[in-house]
Structure formats: C-alpha cells, structure tokens
Length: 640
Image 1 (cartoon, rainbow, N blue to C red):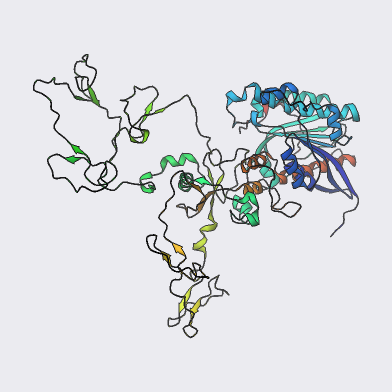
Image 2 (cartoon, rainbow, N blue to C red):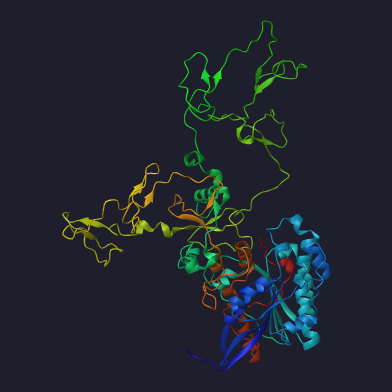
C-alpha cells in the first residue's frame, strides 16, 4: 500500500447534507499538483433530520454530521403548522461557527430542500406560505454561514457552491437575485447555470440535470475554476448488471428486496414497452391480454319466448352460468287503446314527437336510442359508463358500479399523471433522474431487465443429456455442461433420471410421497397451481413481457447504485440505510447528490486551490472556464 506524503487538506462544510452523497464524494476527491497531494477534510454536514445524519456517518465512515434545524421560528410554524417544541431554538451564527469547528471552511456546499421549487409540485401548492417558507432556507443557510465566518473568523469561504433543481430559475428567481447580490457584495465572482448534468460530470448511469451556483472569492482564488470534464453516460445495465439479482437480500442487503405490488400493477408493467410509461397502456389491445375471469358462453343469456329453453342447471343465475336464467317475455299486458307513446324509443337521428306532460316511459314520456352508449357484447350498455361532467346524466339505477351504476369524469380533481408514471426504463439506456418520490405510480422506477431472457445466447446443448445409443452431438470447444458440453446417459452405470423427476402434480389429485430428497430435479416436487392472483393481491411475480425481459420495479438498493453510492459501507455491510422505511429510504436517496459527481466537482475545486496557492493566476486549458458571471435572465431555459 502506497503511503501518500506531503498531503495538504482543504476544509469543507456541507449544509443540508442528507445521507452524505456530497460528503462521500468530497472525501474521495484528490488532486496532485506542484509536488503536493491535495485532499478535502470534512468539517461537518448539517441537517435537521437525525436519521439522515445517522446514515450520513455510516456511509462516510466519519462522525461529522450535526443535527441542526436552520428554520427561523416563523418559518418553522409556517412549514409544520404549529409552534415548535419547548426545547427547540433558532440556530445562531455562533452555533454555525461551532459546527464549523471554529474555523472558516475553504469550501462551503449547500443543497437546500427543493420540494417547493420542483416541477413535481403543483404551481398552486408552490405558492403557499408553507413552501415559500421552505424555499427561504436557500438564502438562510448562506446568510448564517457567511455571518458566522465574518463575525468569528474575519473572512469568508474561498469557494461556495449551491445545488438545486432547474426550476428554481422561475419559482425562486427572487431568491437567486438575493443570493447573487449577497455573494457579489462579499467579493465573489458568481456563475449560475441550469444545465449542470451531474450524470455527465460523474459518468453516472442516469441523466441528472441540476441548477448550480459556483462562486469563487476573487481575493482568495484569482485564477479560474475549470468545469469538470464531461464523461459518457453509462446504461442502467452497466450499473445494475453486476449487482445481485433483485430479492437477494443476503448479498444486496435489506434494500434489495422487491416491493410487494398489486398483481394488476405487475401486469401493467409487463404491457408497457421498454422506454415507455403509462401512456402506452392506451394502445394495448386489451382483448388479447384479458387476464380477468371471463364468463362462459351463455352467461347473461336471455331465452327466446318462442324457443325451447336450454338446460336448467343447479347454479343457474344471470351472469353465473350458461343455464336458463332470463327470458324475453312478450306479455306486457297493454290494453287496447293504450297511448302510442308508452315505452316508445325514438331514434337519435329523427325528429321527436310532441313532448307531453308524462313523467315516465310507462305513461308516455319519451326514451331515445342514444348511439353514444356503445354496445359491448355480453354487457349492459351502462356497465362502467363514464359520463362527461358537462352532459346530462342518463337514468339512475339501483345497480352497483360494475353492473351499471354511473361514473363521472370529474375535471375538478385534476389527477393527471406525470409523464413518467409507471415508466419502464430501457436496460441499454441511461436512467432518468432518481427522485425523492421514486415510486412505480409517479416515476420511471421500473426496468426491462434482460438477464432472465438470455436463453437465445446460450448453447442449445447446455445441460443436454444424450442417449447412449444415439450419435453424439457435435463436439465444441466448450469445457463443461453449463456452457454446452454434452452429457451422455450411460446405461452401463444406470444413471438415468428416476421416474418422477421434474414431475408436476395435479392440484385435484392426492400428492405423491414426500421423500427426504424431495426436489424438482429428483421427484414430483412441482405443482400445477390454478390460483391466479386477483387484481389487488400483492406479491412479487415474474412476468416476461413481449420483448422477452422482466419488467419489474427497481429495488431501493439499485436506485442507490444509480446515485453512485458505494456497494458496501465502510463496516463491510451491503449498502443500507438504518432507522427508516423503504419509502423514506428512497426519498433520502433521490434527494442526495451523486457521490461520483461530487468527487469530480471536488477535484476541480482542489485544482483551483492548488493553482491559487502557487500564484498561477492564468493557465491554458481545453476545459471550459466555470465561474464567469452571467445574467440570470439570459441563462438557458431548463425545466425539471
């Protein structure tokens, strides 16, 4: 092991550090320049969530997290909707100075909460006092830190960086102008860009476009900071292909379990093409994929009054069997002289007769053959009928929803799905950004996994057993039966499989004897199970889609790997988060800064520090100059 000598450390502090993606990346940053090795020493990571702080220290292998709530009292009340507990108090500049270890950090990184600024939040909600108070943490974190450094250290950090969602340009425009004004007042050159792709910076398996402020204190860093070299994106398969198969919690840890989804959700995922989302379900020919119970022929049948009846069965009932259960009875018992409009049905394309004062079809009120109610074979026209909000309702019946009761397309709810809802990502493509609300129903959190469909790439002779009396198959260069070298059933040794091997037992028959070596390879240990899951039954199933892959949700562990978290924690355990539910773990992971991107950002910061220390205020480079002041209004429009 090589021992590095002449190491110089630059200090860093992280605000709103979460579970430590940024911290872990900074601790891996390293730059060799001028005979020295430059690395980063982490002073602290501040967050108000004690569970996030616990996991931050587990992931980074340090004890640098600090549980601190940066809300003002007014902001706390606006966000939580109630007064803080008696032990709560506002953080002061002195508290921040203590967290910094009584020193000015060379590099200050802040990643304030982005919920109120994200496009995932409806515009109406984003304008409420609750989320506006949350957005104020963007400014308060910087103000508290600069105040602490100036008041107790007599200076400011050399480099400051803020990361957030691109929509902060519109929803947080006033905040950005306030931050820019503050930074320039203290002598910072400021760069703001909304096209900072952390995926390209870190060479990740996902596109993750972010808004970024990079500010260098010109008195301390007179030289340029160069933009990190862009790297090619990996595919999802590049990242999660080498991982254990989903469900293997022994090798992948507790976050690698598959979620128990409803059966109908698994079916939806199987029907969505790779790279698509819920909108593809509209084009699915559902008649070809009917999985629900389909009644036998004759169900709901109406017997002809003039014809012999079909067989009467013991389970005869409308919709339950093909036995006689309904009839078209012509005996209406209308008397002579009955008004001609009783039970009259008018055509939709004809002129209607005179409207009378009758109040029902049985005494003269008209009925109409409405062509808008499309007839479906074997069903009442009103079954699952959806009525438009601006149309007159048809007749109200006493039936339940599945047999004719009405439903309405109510526009007041506005429950349009996100474009990526039920999204199934392609194995060979880079993943979309991992979000804090990463669930099947509102994000592309599934993948078309080809690792179960590799049969066409395997040798056809794999595990093949040849008959002793048959000509041998072609001898190939493979060396074992797993790759294709053939086996032979040598009758001289009597090693043919015993009767019952790979046996599949009938559900309606008594089972065969259970032996001590009971296994599908050596006995009848398989079963033809007729219990098809109901739509709402939950579980983990393998459905092979038409493209030959398993469309399944990504596990939380796999999402963490797309965020470039380490496969193993410093203590040797597979990556995992403690003290939180799986849903909360996904939120933590989605909110984190990818470790690999943080490392590359840290590298260019260390290079700038080394050049400033060597008094090299100008250097030639192929890389783009990063910190060039820019007008917010002229930044490229990026929408998240």
